[in-house]
Image (cartoon, rainbow, N blue to C red):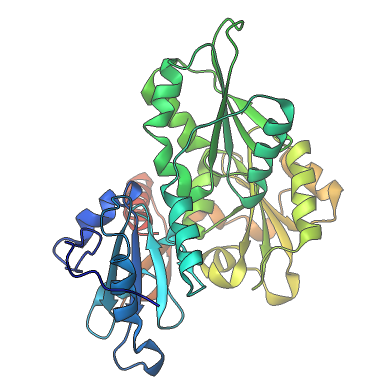
Length: 372
């Protein structure tokens, strides 16, 4: 039963306003917002606004989270959340709605667990091999484990990461460190899977360290969207397994981990649900009978191929750009522009003629991707 505490000023409650919402979203890396999306016209929504207000009153002095509710009968901002039903509870954390997690359970314990996960920004110290191997398991949820071996607790590389790591929780990234006073220089390593690691080789200054975190923020089990896939193929070769409309089964998950070990260097891997990424499907011309299917792409060579995940020869040839299928020869000659129209997406395939046109399109895609 929820209790109201009228004698306290409730600093946790944020009364939604379109004028202040964007600023609150910018601050949500450090202060996430537990948000109820509801419609007064929805019978199942009755009582939920009162419930979340009462819950926010249970501990009015805490400062790590905010609570709000939004009436989706009148507020257009609800289209940003991409929920499938009402009422829905979502945690706003960071500036990309694509990463705002939905809380499926309605009980208080589930709320607290979700809040704890997104407000706990610990840089975990590990002291032995068992703790290190346990930490590596976090890469199986799609994130990267960033590991620092440091000479001292006050090493500048640790301080640089501590100030940035809150921005990477949304990707399921984790951060661990160990102290070893005998090493010559502190090191930073990105583990994108238990068997794939890349060492930071830049200068130990914050700008370069931040760039490294951003470059390797997606683990090899990451669930991709169209914009992420397009950006990754611009920087390196990618191998993405497309399921049609379901989550990744264990056997194919294990296969991706195996390929992660075999083709770790300069390769991004992951998976995606085709039904949710029709931009890629249309660009590649995939059809319903082909799933599940692996798509490899190398923007530098213009090489794209598609094949079944249990076809190691095709994987090997595509990873060395020896398998380039003619059916995909025009993929890099088109741009997919996503336009928002009352929450729905319209895809226009435009032919790009000339370098100036390409530049304009890429700028537009960059602007759109901020909302993803």
